[in-house]
Structures are given as structure tokens and as C-alpha cells.
Image 1: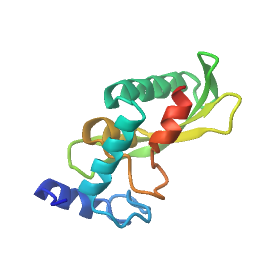
Image 2: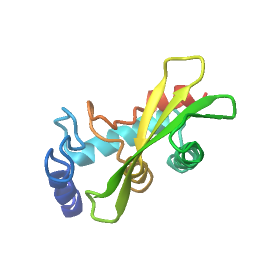
Image 3: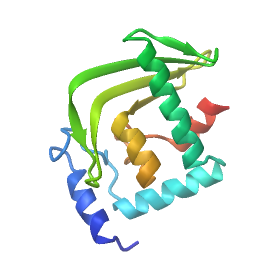
Image 4: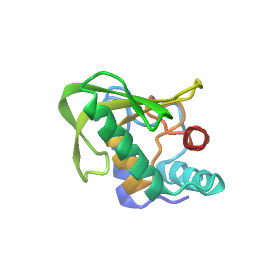
Length: 149
């Protein structure tokens, strides 16, 4: 798929060492537009709404904040814990700057786990970018579906 100029610039910003040491693409060799298009299709296939899942992600972040670094049980279904370091990180699309906070969400009674940052939630919600395959903050639609079921 041909990429618009803002995607070309964002993909450059996603390379390791530009904004973050790890980058956002993992070992994914596809272009940004193809990654987003494929993930949008997967989200639809799993009947997951970007809007609803974004609300859930923000709820998990907010609940984790209440724990002040300790784990918190949410609705007897998820265990969430917040990790925070000083500083901020910009969005590769140049539309915001985000705290360096990470929430780990575990589904109780399973091995399912998802790691999200404020920036990864923004990328998911605003840009439908779940990050490249192999990226540390990759949001797999299948994992989302299982976590939410």
C-alpha cells in the first residue's frame, strides 16, 4: 500500500534510536500502512472495537495508578500493576508527548499478559497502530480478545 507523507515520516521516527532505543517496529519489515491495515482487519475479525478497547485500556491504566506501584485486582478478572519512570516520550506521528508509564495487565487464572504504555494506548486509539511484530509493546488482537473474554 502506498503511504501518505505523514506515515513515511512517522515510520522514520519509529526506527530504533530515533525516539526510543528499541523502536516501534520490532522485526516487522512491512511498511507502516500495511501494518495498520492488517491489524485493522484482525481487530474486525475478532469483533474488537478500537474505541471500546481504548476505553478498557485507559480504565486498566487508571486502576493501576490507584495501586501506587502495587498490583490491583480489577473486577476479579484482571491484575494490573503500574511502573513509572521519570520523563516523557513523543508520539512518532508528532501529535503528543506522553509520560513514561507502563501498565502490565494479567488475566487472573491464566498466563495471558499485556504490557501497555501511555504512548502505546495513544497509538492504538488515534492511529490504529498496534506496533510491529516483535516489538516490546506489540498489542496482539488475539491476546486482546482472550483477555477481554
